[in-house]
Image (cartoon, rainbow, N blue to C red):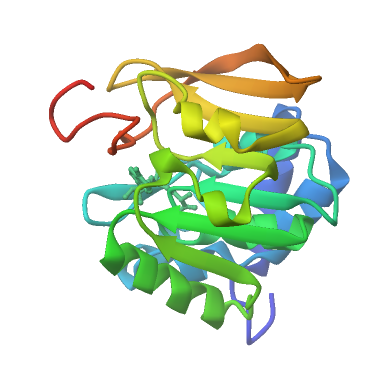
Length: 221
Ligand code: SAM
């Protein structure tokens, strides 16, 4: 515990007992999660709960995901230092901060401007300056910077938006929660020789991905 980082012990325990103990072994991912100050990405009222084993509210009816799920999704992206990554669903900016530790270029799209602005502030407070946040409908991807070596979708849709599959590079990995509104399957796609292999990773519960190729507000697409 230091004066400047009162949560360093909580963060270390989060990594050991919630993440490594459950089978996440990628040392680069574990190091990034030890380094990024998650408490700077939650609202002040929730700061003391930042390292607990659960998602937390961040405003606008949205959440910062449970640390273990963030770790699993990040590990499955198999990031290399030079990779170009697209995140759909910036939320608090925490996942984007981890991506910035692990990859070369990080673009993150958020549909709610308030959250995008707050995420930008959170990233600045954490000293992370390399994430580019875009306000828009991430179900359309972000064609100006495509193709991407990795795409992570942090909100759930009934199917994987086709524009994201199209914007995945050869050899690229995409992780997304897919299924009904309440709880879904976490799906990994790998693009090889233009074909897409689909790997199920287990059950999750995410907020809805709302947009042209996701859920349409309260309606199904
Ligand atoms: N990755 C985030 C973090 O580290 O805090 C958590 C994301 S939260 C579970 C899901 C986010 O996806 C919300 O902020 C929500 O507004 C956003 N979202 C939903 N539909 C979207 C869309 N079509 N494009 C971009 N963002 C979207």
